[in-house]
Every structure is written in C-alpha cells, then in structure tokens.
Length: 161
Image 1: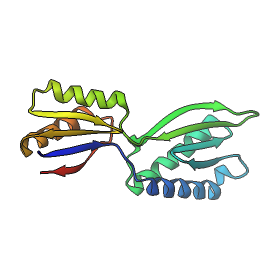
Image 2: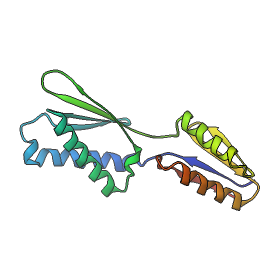
Image 3: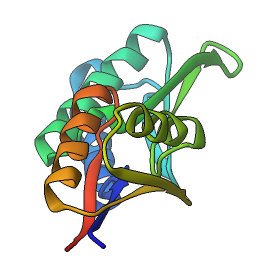
Image 4: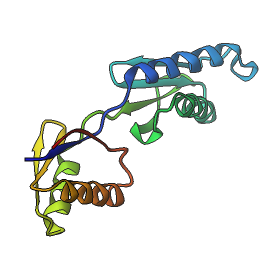
C-alpha cells in the first residue's frame, strides 16, 4: 500500500554554520565592538545576548540572513521573548523546530479526514504517515497539506509505492 511521511526537520549542520557565521560577523562589525553581543547554539536552542532590544533585533536580522543564504527556511525558528538578565543586558532564546508537534499533527490528520479522500493519516513520533490505495490520492493529499499548512515548512519523505 503506497504511503509517505510528512515531516518537519531542519538541517542542523546548516543552522550551526549560520550561527557560527553570525558570531564571526558580530565580532567584526563596528556597531557591536565593545558590547556584550553574542550568539550561541546549544542542542536546538539559539541564545542571543545583547545590550538592548535593538541589538538583539540586529543580531536576529544577521542570523536570518545567514540562514536564508544557507538555504534554511526561517519558519523553522520559534522566536522567544526578549528578557532582561541583569544589569543592562538582555537575552532571547530561539528554538529550532524539529518534528511535528502533536497539536499540529492532529490538525493535519483532521484536515485529511475532513477532505473525504481515500487516504488515512497516522501520527508517529514527530511525523504523520499518510497511506492510501492510489499514488494519485497521495499526491492530492500532499497538495492539500501544502496548501493548508503554510506556516510550517513541511517536507515529505519515504514515498513508497
């Protein structure tokens, strides 16, 4: 029976390179000289530290440019709030999304069920497996998911016939 997996996964190597390039640019830019501006990647969390909200926005802008140049969709980023960390410093933690959250997976599943297509969707640890009798039905399901879930950079893996 033909099937495919709907997944949400990013290339962490590209993200790591973008963070390192951003860190280098922060070190060389004139407007960041002598400030606490820094960026760090731990697991799937990117921590931005700066002297002000404006500086955090500047670092964020540089990071987004580097990610875009590396071919990483910025919809993978889940930007947190800017918070004070003592003195005159602020920080912002940005999470890199990996895996479809249960709520979003249920939304995809309901979308497929509501479409009355002859396919079934099953949630499996961070991905949604869609199975159907015909390849055409699966391709229609892919188009439906792409059209409805524009806020997520979904991709489709393991297309089996």
